[in-house]
Image 1 (tube, one colour):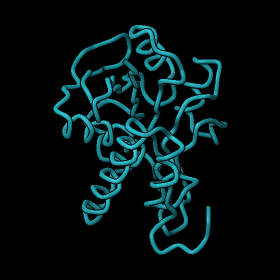
Image 2 (tube, rainbow, N blue to C red; image 1 turned 135 degrees about the vertical axis):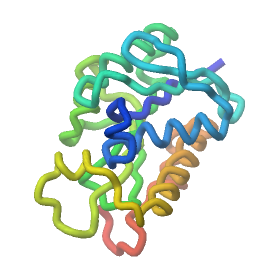
Image 3 (tube, rainbow, N blue to C red; image 1 turned 180 degrees about the vertical axis):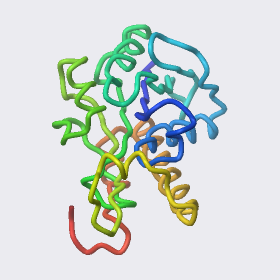
Length: 197
C-alpha cells in the first residue's frame, strides 16, 4: 500500500501559529481535522499522526526544529516509516508568489526558502513534491523576515481559511491522483491577477 508523508513547514509555539511562515502547519492541521487524524506522536524532532486520505495511508508531519532545520525532522520521519523522497509532499509558504497563488512542483531548488533548503540538504535530492502557498501581499515588503513572522491581520481571517482549505484540497488530489493531475487542477495565480508568476 502506497504511503505518503505530508510535511507542513512552520515554527513551533503559540507565538508563530498565526503567521504567514506557519501556513504549512495550518494546512496539515486542516487535513488532520478533515480526516480525523491526531497529530500527537513524537518521532525524533517532529510530531506526526497516521491515518488515511482518499483510501491511501498518510503520515502527517510537523517538524519541531524551527524552520531552518526542518530537514532533520522530515528525514527522521521518512526513515522511521521506511519511506523514500518520492513519498514526500512538503507544503510551505512562498513569499515570491502573490497571496492566494498556489504552485505544485515535483522538483527544483529551494528558491531561497530555508526550510526547503534544509530538506534538500538532509535528503540529498530535490525529487519530492512541494506545494508552495503564495503569501506575498499586494504592498511592498521592506523586511521579508519580519513580515513572514508577524501575525496575519485580523480582517484576513476568512481569506487565510480559504487559502488553507484550497491547499488542503490540492494535497488530497495529489494523494488520490498524483502530482501531475493535481497541478492541472490546482495550480493557480493570485485571484484577480492577469500575469503568470
